[in-house]
Length: 327
Ligand code: PYC
Image (cartoon, rainbow, N blue to C red; front, side):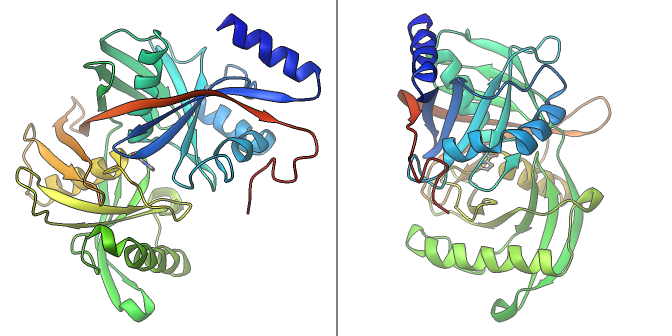
């Protein structure tokens, strides 16, 4: 670690800048954690730091998660210290279009990254995020349960006019991000249909914005989730999730599975404590369940696996025309 700090310093002194990042994937969905060399956002509450990041240091986001440096699906996480009392670490999540309040697959990736670094022991820990504190249980160096923020259905039976797709009925739900949940996918949920699923979900996302259909406090609904059955034994459902930057989630989406379970609970289709096995469009799985806290808020738990595959320095050379990404 010290060697890397020295090297980061030397590079900075020579006109090059560098960040140490660790890449992992959770059920196929990538997470890139900035370990060193990220922006100094001070020690305020994470929602404030997220605002500061977006307003003053967005270049770090662009340099970290845009092509040509990584896949369009990558979620970045800035590892933060000096976080809420009792928390082991904190993270601000971001992607190719902006910032996320919470990210389920990213939290699993972060935990596997901290375990890889030897900074997290097996057992329970608290992680600070802009959406609130989440509890994680590191079950092995790769297997993690995330007890997410309280999740709920905001509006049911919402009809959006999606042009050629016709009227589409869905539920607006919160699982740490805002989702429009469509129970019956307008396109068969098959990996071969990913381009058609992406197109249909994009159409719905744009229609929601155009028709001013929003979440609480007028929040933008930036994720669209299609659901349907899965033929795989032991799986309760398959999904397709469109993320804000119009990439699809390769994992079953932690916040999306949380929103889905809130909807299943609300409609009497899933009892507290029962396991819901959620499959992604590429066949990766999360095991979910929920309980109620003392305020009768629904608290989802998601278990998944993440694997670290790169521990590298991103460098920026002076004169690189695509230093801040393509697009
Ligand atoms: O797992 O919560 C999630 C997530 C959000 C966006 C991509 N993955």
